[in-house]
Length: 93
Image: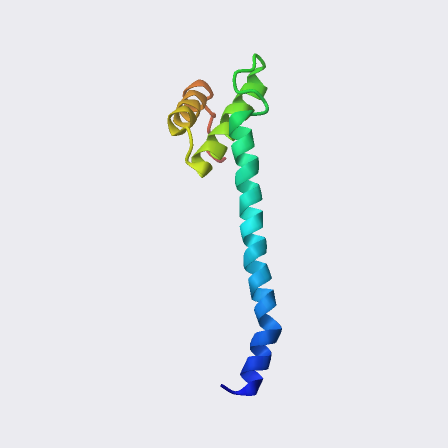
């Protein structure tokens, strides 16, 4: 092996190793935050305030589907939101 290739490898190998470790740490942190949210959602999906409940249901559904956890409950929240809150659609003028 050419000594120039060895020098380049020694110079840049730590950068590649650190970048892969950093992305793993970042993904672990994202997963941890989503798991915490699934355990204790905020705002509360069962809140008496309609706006908070809809925001909570939607955010819970996104987190649960992303983490592939509690999918039936996430689908229930999506179906509830869809059937309860019909968004009016207007035709452009």
